[in-house]
Amino acid sequence: MSTLKRLTKSISVQGSQFVLAILQNILLVPFFIQNWGQTTYGEWLTLYSIFNLLMALDNGFGQYFSNEFNLLYHQDELKAKKLLGSSLRVTFFSGLIQTFIVLGFLLIDLNENSSMYFIQKAIAPYVLILILYRMCLGGFKGILVKTPIALGFYHKSAFIGLIEFTLELLVIVLASWKNLTLLETSLVFVSTKACYVFISLWLIKSWTKSLFPWWKWGSLKEGYLHYIKSIPLILKFISDKFSVDGINILISATLGPNILPLFTTTKTLSSTITKLSSLIFDPLVPEVGRLHAKKGFSKIRDFIQLGWITNGLIALVILIFSVFAKELYNYWLKGEYSLNENLYISMMAATILFNFGRPILSYLTSINHIKGLLTITILKAIITFILAHLLISEIGLLGVGISLFTAELLTGVLGPYLFYNSTSQKQYQINMGEIAWAVVQLLFISIGLYLVVHGIMNSTVLIIIISGVTLSISYIIFNNLTLDTKKKLKSQRLNK
Image (cartoon, rainbow, N blue to C red; front, side, top):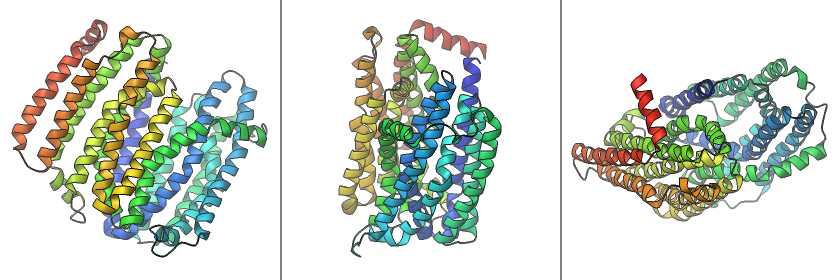
């Protein structure tokens, strides 16, 4: 299969997920708030955040399994089958650990004045319902759905995930429309997912007949050893979830569940930009890995600089959008919430910083730089959560926005450092001057973001000035590309 076809299929899958995310996080949010109310919707968000955080144990091991199975299946099919059977056995015990965590939290004698008392009494019992489903069925499906990928059925595996996400969305729409309680919603949610698990397993069996029966090979002991090996990935997933779902839980426990939708809707505006960046860069990860394997460091350097140009233009779009952000936000949520301007600015600035580091992160992912990626992820989670915990009681949601921005700022320097140390041919390194141009570009746009949102300067004049600066810097960065890359880009433009 050609590179173009691989990218086309990957982008198609990413695009479908992006559309569903837009539907859930943007188009349907006003419907949820109006039917469920701010508090109940906030409680559901809290419940699902806790569920997601606990599932990080499965997700980390699942990623490890997927990587190992894809490798082994093409080298030694029997070893791949043993890995599959062993993984299914240990997955049950992973679910058991999650169940005991929830039960332990429910049995703790918390003071009524504790911020976690509300979570314990109003949310945790329903989390237990979701975790029991995960232990009995969902965890096994999570492992098995990754097996068709090794057989060349990536699109079919992705299709199962897309349908499951669609069913989840339909359940939440029905629950909010009928104004179901959290208990009723949880029961309908797990019942629907359980039924779909059996359909998924039937489909997976038909696609992977040579692997059935899945449980025939392997042992619990072997599964345990693989689980130990997956701990770095598990830690990475837990850290990722803490930066998102952990913050949601903190807000709900500290400020109340009715405040959580104000944060998540503001975050949606920034995360949509992040998803757009993912749509561009995630499908390129395998191609960058191939360039690294072929010692194509000059092209990797060009890839990173082209990423800076792309993200500079995306940041410019953020700035233009911010002129109308307040009015659009109020129209979107039909007056249920008003835009918190300082929270919006801090979160958008954090997104701009994240996108600046995205090309380098894509490169580190492509070469499987687990240690570096884990370091960045854990540091980001620790800085975000600790700083948010310290600031949220003093300045509310703005404290969360500041913590997210600070975490991106402090961990952003690690990417270029890791890139430098992972490249053997130092003549292809990105020098400080080239990095400085990208930083100046982002600095101008971030300052413009503050001025535009607060109406300190005429927005039209400001956008014209910053657009000129951004395009000029993009041109300078473009001129730093290798002659071969510039020729290819120009030829593609002429052939259109």
